[in-house]
Image 1 (cartoon, rainbow, N blue to C red):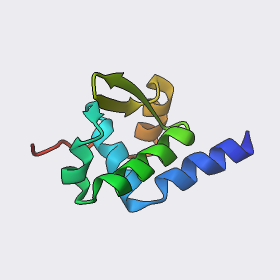
Image 2 (cartoon, rainbow, N blue to C red):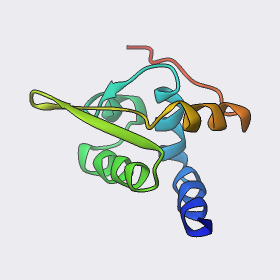
Image 3 (cartoon, one colour):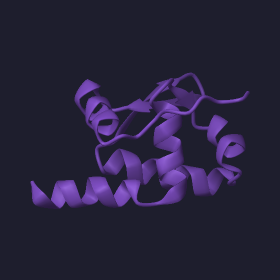
Amino acid sequence: MVKNMVKFFKALGDETRFKIVRYLLNHEYCACDFTSMTKKDQTTVSRHLKVLVDAGVLKFKKNGRNIIYSIKDKNIKNALLKFGIKGIKSCC
């Protein structure tokens, strides 16, 4: 249990991953959307998304060739909001 919590908070401790989570509080997005939102290349974004999935923050589903990411569940979303994390909207 403690290891899972450490992994969870460590995943949020990176600025890029934190930004991704903030976007996902409002809407689900394709992995490809995060390159423009974070100004990072696809490889870097994929690595960050994997860390967030492994930490239990995000889930994903395949939609054809696209991978769509969202907050794992309502409990995780509510916890993030209780921590005072505010969602941000994509300009695109």
